[in-house]
Image (cartoon, rainbow, N blue to C red):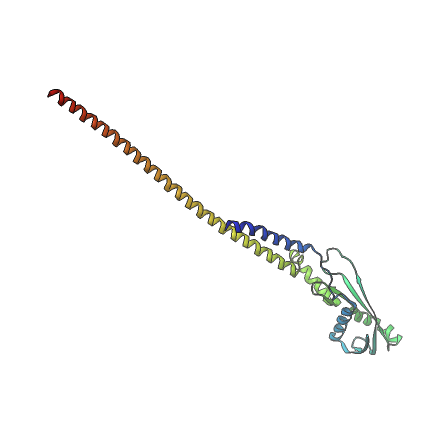
Length: 243
């Protein structure tokens, strides 16, 4: 039992250390971080926009588009998809990669463009997407703002860890619990062994005491026998003289 425990404790602590070290390894962006995935996310955002009236693909990066935000019903072309890394912004735990979808309203007159530039600006907010590394997805501006709010409104210690980090922490706590449990069992076994040894020593002590008492009684009996023999010898000697 003790030998097995001495081997398992270093192994358990090694697994705990290895799990905690993985928390320090930066997450590598996955295959979802591509122009194609950004374009697919943008298309889905446009289709799910409650103010979109028509959004149908009519060719490679070409769409039939109509919206309630401004007067337009015509062709919309995606002329470029640009991905950039904004770098770390303060202590922002979210990923700071963005994708910008550049479009061209093929059938929009300049007069409409100039007259409705504010509503066009509101619509173009969804043309900037934000990459979330934890879920491997692109978020719209509104979704990204919501994610930021949820992140900073949660306790700081909780926001410092991702879901995978909590899994490793759970494994580490489980291993620590196993080590503590095994240690307690080992201590109980040691206590039982020590108690048994104490009982053996106590019995041995009692046995030695009894042996010492028996030896003392034997010595007394021998001395008494010698004294008796001496008396009998003296009596016999007196009898011989009187005869």
